[in-house]
Image (cartoon, rainbow, N blue to C red; front, side, top):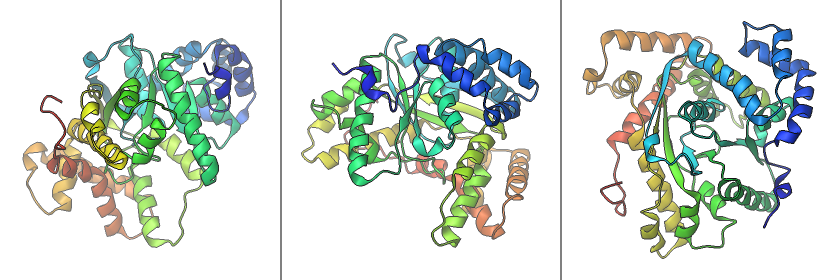
Length: 388
């Protein structure tokens, strides 16, 4: 049996490590400045005093992460909701695979909803590219995050992927801990949510069972996350615009840090999570396919089908689709007041972005319209049974 120590380079912190980590955070000015932005009603002294009482990972989540999430929900949303948890067993561990819209909130809000409904919180996959300061690494690993190593050579990437695959299996089936991972590397920028087959190939790398047996053991649960207002819609519009207009444009670590912060403090409206049934039935059908490439393609299509079908469309999505396509096809799904509010929201957010105004507006509308397009074009793959 593989020892937990085999994963020391990527695993979350253990309870025994918490006091030392908390001591480092309390002494770190950058972390405390960040915490003061998240808890503007608290003084530095109160934050330090609260953290000094944390002795375990559960303490940290209940005393720091839960109040932080509650504060974000209260001040930047009109409420969060979830459906589908009745399909899950509270005593089982699952691999939650979701669309990826926000660096921090996708997993954080899911965990809050699991916590409120008496489910165990998940371990969270986070890219090493986001751990741009030691205190950020400490913070996320205290919050049950494990590291996905990025920016490696091809050889190292294969080793890292196999190591990561092994850890996820270890977390699910030895630690009996649920895991959250995004369906793709990096956030969906244009609202067109697609599962990367490379993710699924990574998940199978450490397995020595058949395709169906391995993925059944992972107990994959597709999750659709729908934000009424994308918290980083303006930043995403800017990034896509710069990729079109500047040769060799690349985001900086500072951009990622800004996205993390803006995601937490910007308005989101209503936020809804729809949890699908664990994927198992169709894996035997996929197993019968001759080519392994077809198997991964089929599994990705199955997850996409579930996420697209379960994505909750808000009035903003329909408004953006109608404007982008010069139609009034969905005018019954929104009011004139809702349309006016959405356009004012867009003007406010894009008012901070430099560039061709009309192209920026088009990109902005696409972010909100693509989920509608995906539901319009939703086609059940041939191998999916009617009861799924």
